[in-house]
Image (cartoon, rainbow, N blue to C red; front, side, top):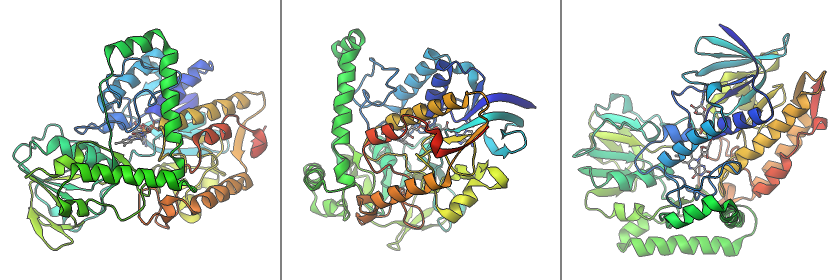
Length: 487
Ligand SMILES: Cc1cc2nc3c(=O)[nH]c(=O)nc-3n(C[C@H](O)[C@H](O)[C@H](O)COP(=O)(O)OP(=O)(O)OC[C@H]3O[C@@H](n4cnc5c(N)ncnc54)[C@H](O)[C@@H]3O)c2cc1C
């Protein structure tokens, strides 16, 4: 069946929902939001592992146009964020535009009709504008470990937590010590029989200091929303001041972060040998900085062992470390993160002259203009595309910047006679040359670690390397002069 729309949005996470709210505000009702899942929420639907929560304080991790005075804690849990997102869908009346169980197999530009043809769930959705909002961290990765397919126990990724599987009394192997593992290990450690935590590189961890939000404070936020706005601004400014840890010469900041993390480790882990194993040998910020108050204490439990050796392979009932030791386990939980630097979604998008985005990016490197538009792909807007993810502040801020940009583009495209817009290759090139120059001397490039920020060539294709307000300025308005406009 074929459906014609002005706009098709792919993805019903924060990006898709926020964009849908803006479309409605602009008076655009002829759109659908397609999602492969059976519910809205994106990241916060998929990652339901025990202890899943946000590393950005609640007051800032929300839309600026939909404050939530009712956060129960200073850092929001997965469940509370998911509820907030449902509330936004109701508040902005976008529910009827959402189409679940609609995995987009292919979106192809049809030159003759100047329409995108989006294939999903056996339907063809034709649209003048395609907004691709499938998220920077929505494709879990599992390394190809030799023997994994022959492992007889249970295996699952943290983004697909098996809630029906009882971990009580099980010998568990956790692979990885990234953001997710740091959150779920303390939750499962008390119930499992034994937990081997296979570590390739220890993360830098600073205190989280999560606390409940008092009823009085919530009532105040409800009565005087400006108070919550002041809190948002304060958190935003503190996070923004951390940019120097990652890019440029923030030597004092870097030293302060290092000291805070090392003091936290020293305070929580008295055992010198374990402390050595947990001390990173690269610059803070090179990998994602983490916040936790319960991770280190969990590692000191008698039933938890940090295996300071990456996983080498699996046998039917064992995990074998690169230390050569085979450890018998019942279940393997992959805390192995997501594919971000070479985004798998590019496989699905085919632009002018049949060029597949993945092929283009394979040949030229993953890049876009302002994290959103790509030469050769008319009327396509990526949300949180290349170099639009953050290491130092709230992603919602970046998402809102993209919403502004796309709304401004759509307003331009509403002019009579404007059919297509396509970013000029020279604009895209100049922008990416600037990005890569700025990234050259960042901690992500020179900090002495590998990370999911980098592609297989070692090029950072994920992070915005500057103040977020500069991204906001860049995306405030769509400039037709930067685009080839076909009338
Ligand atoms: C565990 C975890 C913790 C995080 N913590 C933080 C944090 O502390 N602070 C922060 O700022 N950010 C954090 N993030 C980043 C987070 O992803 C963003 O903040 C934000 O939720 C991204 O929203 P999104 O809508 O762009 O993408 P997503 O939430 O990933 O939504 C994308 C949607 O697209 C759908 N989709 C994907 N492919 C297809 C397809 N082919 N067809 C149809 N639908 C498709 C998916 O089903 C999904 O619903 C975290 C991410 C993860 C995974």
